[in-house]
Length: 330
Image (cartoon, rainbow, N blue to C red; front, side, top):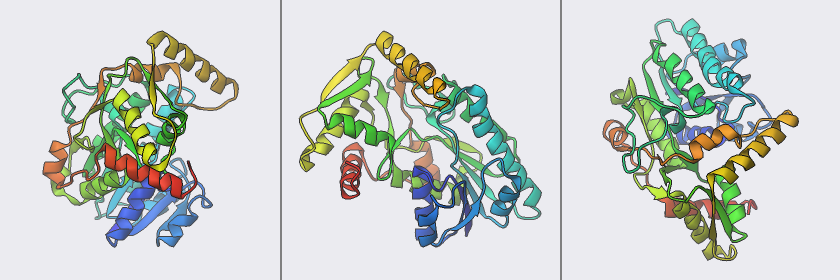
């Protein structure tokens, strides 16, 4: 099997490229930075230099592929237009390149979207992927717009909406570990927000399964562990993962009321704009932080793709902290 992975130098895409190579696939990676992609060469991954707006590179990357995994996307932007340019127009450009090269070969297309595209869940009722989408942020709307161009492409597609993803090489949950190591872990609101999560290598296995199952064509899924936990339980679990390794004092949860959190996000967003930079910590992000639940039901995907997450939160965090320490990240 020949597979293209966009975003292979990132956290999820890197785990996916490894999982595909372990299964014997011939993997091509579209990479913006050949220097960052050096480790992919050691895995036997072919690289094509370019991005989602570089049409010659896209045409080269998609040529002859059996499955295309579109992982690349913007998670931080200066405004909604920039999000749409990356997450909708970048996807459109990739699909156009496939259409130009397709001929008699019709590749499978697996889009790695986000739970943000579907919107929040009601408390106690994880989403299945069949509900009307209701994103609450510019990021979520841009991911949903990317989904829409995939649905209109005429390709056999599968959309996977991961929730929070964590694991070795992740830099976002690493920030939580570094704060928790000092004995204090802030959460937005009262700490009761319900969450789903998926361990990075488990998600990679889910994406491989999505691209290899005929039953997943034309479907949208949440790929996650079935365990549901609160935001406060999450930071306490991070503290427990640190404790066996002598990670510091017990973690105390610091609950941030909405008014204070929104003020802080306004300040971080303004600082980023003044610096000409993008950040995920903006006032718009508060629309996600104060929802009752971000939870998904993996049952439909398990039934159609034969995949199940093997790491619950405790096991996944323990493996993550081991990797962080072994590589000097903590």
